[in-house]
Length: 418
Image (cartoon, rainbow, N blue to C red):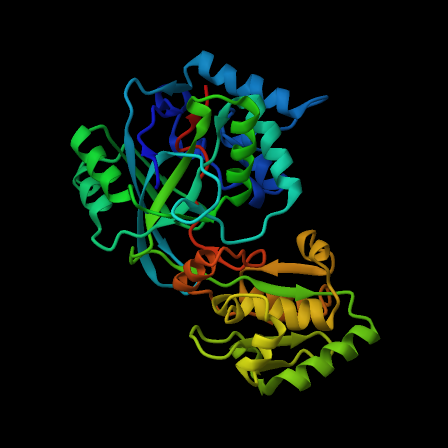
């Protein structure tokens, strides 16, 4: 059972910190050095200074001092009463369609993974978890939220919060993707109780933020006892929300020597029907049925549509997995081609050794055409229902199986842990 609670949020005070637009940032793991410098130039209070800290000899100590100094200056203030925060994102996805995704910020009691509680859906890597744990120890706060899904077919949670969205937003920000993020604070006890009733029996599925969730599990156990450190900042979105979409993440490979190229060609001929297509039509259309992939190789810059010859091939290769996983495009690709033909290990896949991920078809094609990568496998999006079905079986998808767009911003709200 999900323990969803309002939070006494720590947040920016625009009277001291300036416009919210200048102090928020994208998630830390998509920010490079030049973008970090650009964000810091916008405002000395930009959250990237804490979320992606720099400083010698201990950048985490530098993050702690900066975060505390903002609170001393009044740039960050804490609410006197707990609230839920209604949140909307108006966006155009990679497919060009305009949508609105609706959710709410809250704090959720940390639970171990399992049925009826919290489910992951992708494998994680050890490196990011250690980094986030050290930052959490230093700041004693959730700097960025976890994005999770829950089932609410009656739309009861949003119905309780929607009346607040008729008011002027507490905050509004447009990001680099032209997504408009809006926040409304809801302190009303009846609304909070209605949201808690709607989520009480919900199983939460982590859409984005697995590393941070597992970091907070470790931190909570490290601190011990009960208290605010047992809760984590989340944005919850209903699985049934019409604005919830998943887009594909494409796979690029390099280091294809003659032996690997031959093994790949043999596997493709054995397991797939192969049809040449115009390169602009290489990405497969969304849909179910047998696995379909776009395939582009740097050797001839030609594109092909790969269709699995028979589901029995995937069933045999993934015999130790659930039926839901055996129909998962990224799982079948990983087993038959990345691991099977190319011999990549779990460690290679986790650390991007010979493998790269592209969220844009044009980027994938350009990297193959330039010779930076030897081949690209263009993916279909993973349906939300399939994400839920695989997680319900207690299995984790390969990394980057889903691309939930848009991302949540960092810096809208913070959750103090002490």
